[in-house]
Image 1 (cartoon, rainbow, N blue to C red):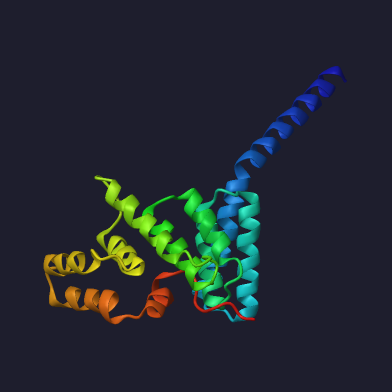
Image 2: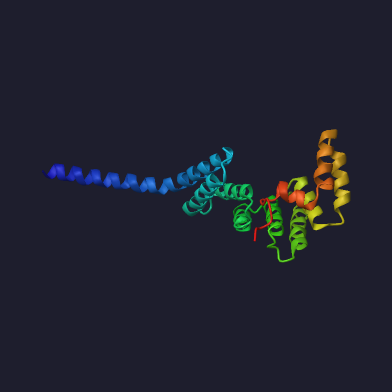
Length: 203
């Protein structure tokens, strides 16, 4: 009886340890699983009902792991697909906090302008991104991010920088694409392609 009781207590202790271990590692897996489910809905090109479900999945993922970057990226893409401005700036702000690179900072400026949440400080936001890129000698920012920030900031250096960039491209196709993106596209076109918002907030 004593041996059996000791074995039973030991078994219970082992089960508790296993359960606790599972709790400590399962949260991140759950966030990843929830995000994967949301992304699959996007891939399947679901209608609004499915997208609502995908949005809910990303919300749960961010609650399970507030630092899980793919959940915020998926959330932004879902909101973009739905054409909803609500929540986009907030999700982009969080993404820029978690991954404070120049591209995410630029997208945040664009989201704020596109959704009307920039308080009339659009140029200042873009100029800050330009300054940060220029201040870093070993910046990881791509040339296109820099050019886009210059253009949206309406910076005087844009034309010279664009000319130098176009000359550096090896193919006519690449030059034509860059010409379209940085010269022929309107400001609104750029938001449609690059910013994490697809339309103005609905009243």
